[in-house]
Image (tube, rainbow, N blue to C red):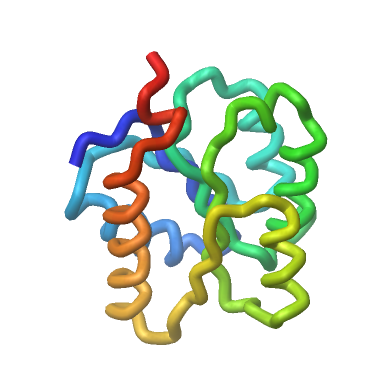
Length: 141
C-alpha cells in the first residue's frame, strides 16, 4: 500500500497505541505520530509541517477529549484547511456522541472491541480502507 503522510494516533491508553502500530505494520511502514490527549495533539498539529494522512482519535481522554479536539481543529483555519481525515476509535459510542461527532465533520467512527484480535482487525480494516482511497492529502506534493 502506498500511503503518503504520517498516521496521527491519539489515545490515552498506551496499549491502544501498540495495537495500532501492530495493525499498521502489516500494510505499510509509515511513521505513527502519537499523542495521549487532545491538548497535546492540538499543540503538535499547530506546529507540525509534515503531511498527515489521517487522524485516529479516542473520544474519552483527559484534559481535552476527542470531541473538543475536533472542535478546536475546525476552529483553527490553518488546521481546518489541511483537510486531514479524522476518524474516532472509541468505546464510547452513545447515539448522542456519535451524532455530535458526525456533526463536526468526522469521516468515520469505529467502536473499540474488548477482544484484542477484533480490535486489531478493525484497525487493519480502517488502514486498508483509507489506504485505498484518493484524498486531497494523498495527491498533494
